[in-house]
Length: 84
Image (cartoon, rainbow, N blue to C red; front, side):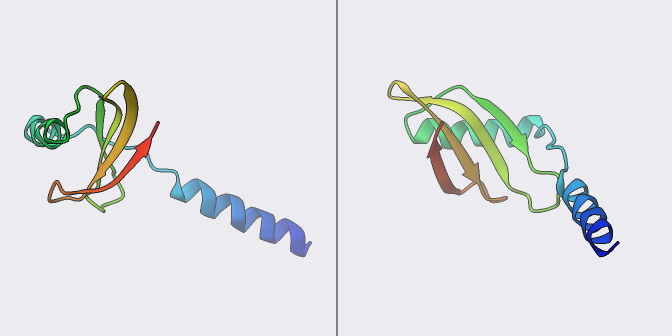
């Protein structure tokens, strides 16, 4: 019985953490594009995390023949770049 309760709690917590991202506004997307271009990159898809952190994502950005994912703060400062 304890295992069932623990499993139910784990499932509830996991499902509450899965929140869909939002599309950034046109102004936000323009600023993301500027930041990506300043790194010598282009393209990609842009998202805004919806859990209130204000973090932006630029995914599948093309840089020097490779794909990268950028994570930006709500102030549009890059804090992570990962190779896709």
